[in-house]
Every structure is written in structure tokens, then in C-alpha cells.
Amino acid sequence: MTGDRPSSSTYVRALERGDPAVTVLCVTPDESTLGDLADGLESAEPGVEAFEARTTVEAFHVLEAEDVGCVVSTLDLGDTDGLDFLAQVRQAYGALPFVLLAEDGSEPVAAEAVNAGVDGYVPYEGDPGRSEFETLVDRIETVVDDYRSHQRFEDATELLFRLTEYTTDTLWMFTGDWSETVVINDAYEDIWGRSQAGVVADPGDFLEGVHPADRELVREKMAVLSSGEPTDLEFRVDPGDGVDWVSVHAEPVVVDGEVEYVAGYTRDVTERHKRERALDELQAVARDMMSADSRAEVADITTDATERAVDFSIAAVRLLDDDRLRVAGVPRHRVLARVRPLPPVLGITGVRVVRVFRVQEAILVYRLRTWRNV
Image 1: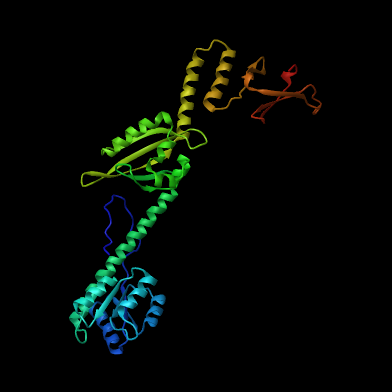
Image 2: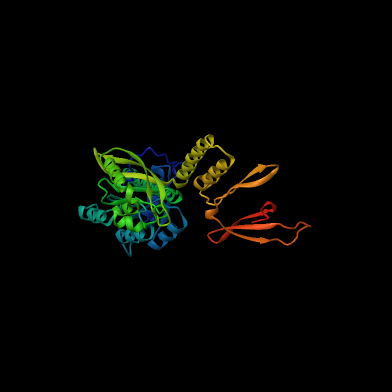
């Protein structure tokens, strides 16, 4: 286990503020050897704290109760051996560092230990002396450092995965030839209206969600990206409930001079496009207003602008005329109006109500005494 990680310009704070002391669980059935082992480790390295266990049952009690950083076991454990104990530790605690201490330093035993997955193998003859303890401490510190480094990397990776879940942008990565999907977060389904599983199984599936008129542009930009150049583009997608606009920024990931991956994000910019379109319409309205010759023409331009710029097809303009507000412009061809008289209210008679409907839902109500003859 090495804990190596790819280089990146992204800053991730260390998840632990300094490494705690190395805690070692010493396991051997021999009382004398157990005491010598624990004392020898602590004297060889003041930063080591040793726990003791005479059987595997005792060992698992300690593992459950304490934050053990490494297990050191002799090969001979009486009713079992260190390799069987290693298998039990791996099943319960995964990659927790395990160092085997063996009197029989033969090559067959060493090979069997390595094949079984021990992180360290330290042979000795007779009672372990100071040099053996120093060698053992060095080995323990090495495997514990590697284990902690790997754990930090896994924790940082987990944080980054959580970030992909919190963002509303689609984050994606494909192989340089677009033949495999490497990373895709679940925001893809919201923006594209297509399943995440579909683009994992078929990396080209996302093209089916691109507006047909924009697919050739997208393919051209994919080729640019695969050639090693970054790209930015905006295009339309159809998630199933209307056409949306998306913005893409993407970069090639170059390894040893070759584009190994292409990665980027896709962001929904539909609302921005609507605002830009509305601003363009309002600017056009301002120009039309400058050339209007009558109040009625101004009213017509205004109602038309309301429909185009605000995306609302029912509008009315009332202009002040002889100290009274009069309706000057209504796109009546778009209005279904129902007129009914109101009962007298506070002594006022002759008032009629015009109720205007669109898509069978009342959305505007006028109470206009000026419309007596409607």
C-alpha cells in the first residue's frame, strides 16, 4: 500500500491536524515475550504506545476498545498461527497494518507471509534484541504512515465525490477518444433529461439529447477537445419539457503527451438566455418607440413588447386622456372575455366586470366603469 495520489492544483486541507502517536497491539501467547515486546517497542521509540494480548480473543477485545494503528503478532499463537489471525483481522478491519514477527526466518515462511498479505515481516533468532526492535519499529512506522496516507487520500476523495453531488452542474470525464465514460454525476439527468446509466453504458448517448441543429457543432468541439485544445461552447438540449440552453467548458487531460481524458462541466443557462432575449426585445421596443407617430401606435408597440419580452400574451395599456384612464391597446385576438354586471356596491351602479382568460384560467380582472357599453 503506497497511498500515492495524482498531482493536482486543487487544495484539500489535511483532514487530521497532525498524526497521533502510533498505537501497537502486541499479540503472543508467551508472557515473557509479550512483556519484552511491548517494553522493547516503547523504549525503541517514545512515540509508540503498546497494548498486550495473549490470545486472538483478547486481541479482538482490544481492537474493539482501542484505536489501534498496527498489529504485531508472532507466528506461533498456540492454538492458531499468525497467518490465520491475519486473515481474521483482514476480514474484520480491512487494511489495518499487520506485522509478523517470526523466529523461523526461512524463505518459505517469508514467502507464505507475503502471499498472505502481511505489511511487514521481521525474523529474529532467540529473544528479540534492541536491533530487532529498532528494525521492527522502523517497519511499523513505515506501514502505519502508508496506511494513514491512504486513508487521508480516501477521505479527500470522498469529499470530492460529495462535491459532485452538491453541485447542480453536470461534471463529466470521458476517455480521450470518447469511448468510455469515466465520471458523470447525477446532475446529468436533470440537465439532459436522460439517464445516468444510459451515458455510462454508451458514452455517445448524450448526443441524442442535443438539439438536432446543434449536434454538428458539438461533434466539432469534441474533436477539438480530443486534439488537446480546451473548448467553450453553448448549445441547445431537449430534456423532454422544452428546449433549454447549456454552457460547456472542457479541458483535455494530457498524460505523457497524449490526451488520455477529456473533462469538463455542463451548466444550464436557459434563464440567462431568456434575460438576454428580453433585453434585446426591449432595446428593439425603444427603437420602435422613437419612430411611433401616435398614442395608439405606442400602445400597440407596448402590448406587443409585453408578449415578446416578458413572454406574456395578454396585456393592456391604459393612457390618461381627459383626466380618465382609457384602454388604448389590447391584443383582443388573444383574449377570451366574459362580461357580467356587478350588483350595486356602496351605491355604485352600472359597473361591469371583464374577466380575461388564458388557457382556461382567470388571470386578469378589470373593474372599469368606462366600459359600460361592452
